Image 1 (cartoon, helix red, strand yellow):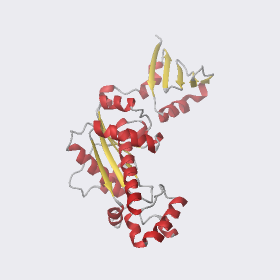
Image 2 (cartoon, one colour; image 1 turned 90 degrees about the horizontal axis):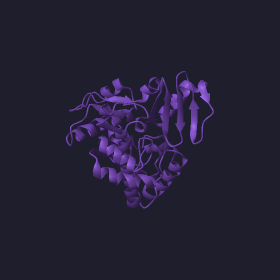
Image 3 (cartoon, rainbow, N blue to C red; image 1 turned 180 degrees about the horizontal axis):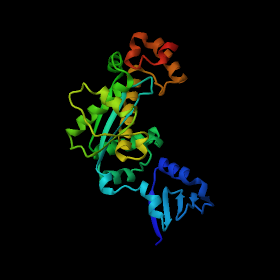
Image 4 (cartoon, rainbow, N blue to C red; image 1 turned 90 degrees about the vertical axis):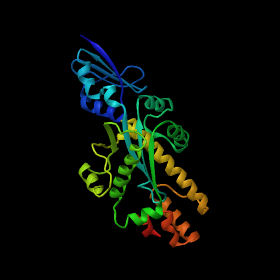
Length: 280
């Protein structure tokens, strides 16, 4: 018996589906990105973000992309910002999302958090922070440089993620589904935090998780917002605009800072172990 299943897939899921059956590609109808006709089904991916599975085997092809709603929520997720930036702190957030929170995110226009620009982050983040349980940690440059003397970047991130979940657990009971946007293998993550007083376990590690899990996406937005606000305060304190990233503009900015405020103050605004410091 033929059936029709409509799902809203992430960009990553759309790509995965297309790559799996692209040899069965057919001419796409109006308003569709592509259409595939593997045996027993017609799969159409629309520009609206919806993917429609039709045919007697529709459920077979759709099943790997379906998650029971009861299993999906509630969920907790975490993400970090600032680890690739020469200037500014490392910010890590962990968030708790239930079905209602997910609906709010959809209403605010959040789908792929990485696709949001700074202006959108500044608008959306305060609304999220008013309405969802979250924990936010900001490791400023001075403390970061001290901690980095005995911890590499991944160890620092692991300890911040773990502490963010510990803090979140004091606000609300952590759900069974906990996700980290993976930056290191699971075994190394737990090795990095083995000396911590409290350790949160049973975590799911997945790359590009902010595309798939609303809790990780929310944490990404909150962490980015905290980073932007921190950069604003630094600019006000030191009387200059700090560049994001770690490329040539950051090099130029570092030279300007040292000329204006001296090398001894650089550790207060930058991650001094980055190669940018060698370019001064």
